[in-house]
Amino acid sequence: MLKSWMVIAGVGLAIALLSNIIRPKDAKWFRRLERPQWLTFEKLIPVIWTTVFVCGGWSAYIVWEQTQSWRWMVAYIVLEVVTVSFTPVLLWSHSLLAASWIGGTGFVVGLVLAIAVLQVSVWAAALLIPYLLWSPIGTFTTWEMKKLNS
Image 1 (cartoon, rainbow, N blue to C red):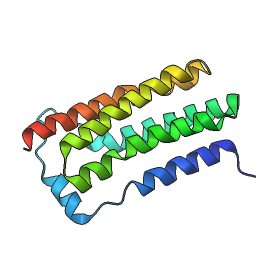
Image 2: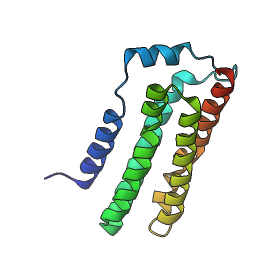
Image 3: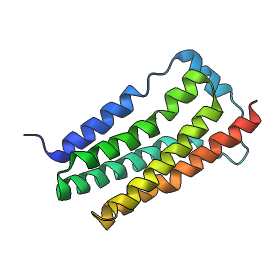
Image 4: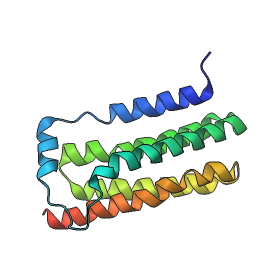
């Protein structure tokens, strides 16, 4: 029998993998973009996002174990879908502005979810803090890249 954490991790992984359909021409376009001089941590971004997603999944697990509510799980899925849509929107549209809007939207959705989850579990809300800290940094970085790449 599947444990709830396995299902949550599997759904999260499936959503993330589906959003990573990258065409070679788009990857080439992205590599050629100018970056801000202060962007010295780019190689850490995959590790940072992995941490953020693991914390989000753990938060969802805590909420599921306490509520058994599909509505909460839909809210977590909405957050993940908005978050991972950043990559295909950026790469398929070649629009740093559109990606910045997706990033900002993700932050708002994450903040609303964290505040709502606080009534269920302080720990579940706390596990969303890495997302709430990192999402604005990623959004700001994209916004700054937009200025450099008109």
